[in-house]
Length: 251
Image (cartoon, rainbow, N blue to C red; front, side, top):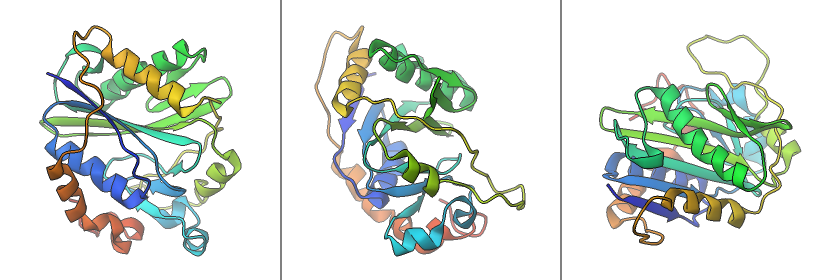
């Protein structure tokens, strides 16, 4: 099974989250994508935005708050932040992007790739279970996953040279008790890696190509993926992004 490498330059948060779902639903091979978002707050599938970020501030500053279709907590996106995504066929065990069963295995497999890239760039990082990559300075990447019978997605953020004060302010959960059915973000000390985007991306591609006899170069989004993403209009819908996840249509 081949490996498709994607580096997309789209910065619109709504489009990028729609693309994640479109690629997941259509992917027939292993795909690794790196992508960037404008300044934005991305919340998890089971969260209430009003408890995970300052919605009024975000609206006044025109900062998108977008719900992804994977679980987990709220994360910051913006300048100095890079996103990575690993799409697999469920149960595949082919090379470095193979995975076993369950979300923990998915996080472990994906984190091992990111940690190895960082190690080769001179940074000691480790997985802090279940879904954080940390250095001694703090959390540098959070991860979220989605597993279906046929497909697996693990994606995460990577803090390279972000405004940490901005990131912390935009993702500080309100310290109040709410119904436990809603997923809450976990506060953590965060840190920058101090890397250039190009260094990390080059290191990631090198690791993924090791052991492969062919390098097909960077791939492209398919026309079908772009069309499906365009039809996923829920990502621009206020109710999807800010409403109650147990009342809005999530699929």
